[in-house]
Amino acid sequence: MCLSTIYKNDKADNNILCRFVATITVDHDKLTFVDVMGEETTVTGRLVQADLTAGTVIVSTE
Image 1 (tube, rainbow, N blue to C red):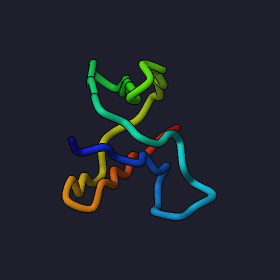
Image 2 (image 1 turned 135 degrees about the vertical axis):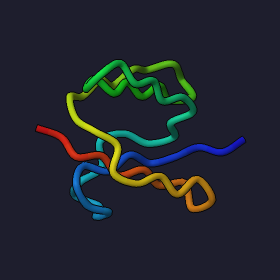
Image 3 (image 1 turned 90 degrees about the vertical axis):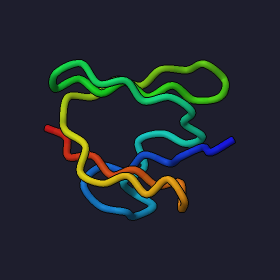
């Protein structure tokens, strides 16, 4: 199972939005991340980069 850490704007520890994300859903400018425990985090923004091998996703948010 590949789980990811979601970062806001840049890959830095102080920019982590959520961890252990299993599912990402996009609805126009709304990004919803669901972690392995089922907790949802929704932000307005866009996907910048996804490195699924490293388990990192960077999003640009307002």
